Image (cartoon, rainbow, N blue to C red; front, side):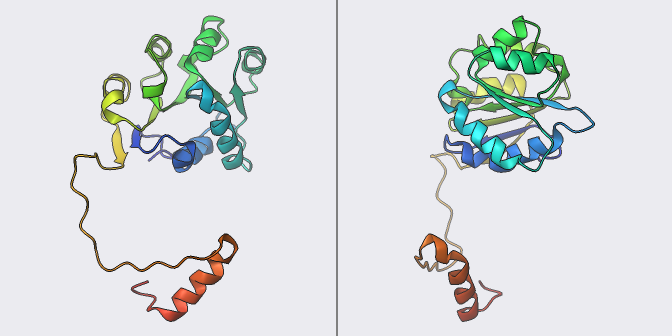
Length: 203
């Protein structure tokens, strides 16, 4: 869904690693000859985690990524047209918007990470006003109730996936489950051994 450019809301625990598939899909659409640009807004304390994940996923892709804790370097790279994905906090993005370096109307995708932890909507709302109607909106949240208003306003009719709500009944088991514990280095060998012992169809 993310790779195709559709709007998406995902409910997961608040860790960037859960967003790897959607972020990889986003990075695959940015940069290159088409010149698509994206903006990832996350809480300031999580920016480095998002940056590390984006650099890992995008190492073989043309997308140029910048983590911006402040304005200076991002300002220069945006004005020089050397940036495909800006990862920053809403306050920094708003400052870049006010300095006419960040052009929201040119964005192909907006990625909101844990909007319930971004604080007041004062910084997010101005960024959304000029976002193109067909720009992709991806929202990762650990608290869908707290993010519901923002999703309704800015990512309406988005496909929602993720963890079931705490009120929902646990799913019924589909059958007996057996586990095996092995060291990290023995994972592949252990899988081969299990496949040898069990019927591959049921495995």
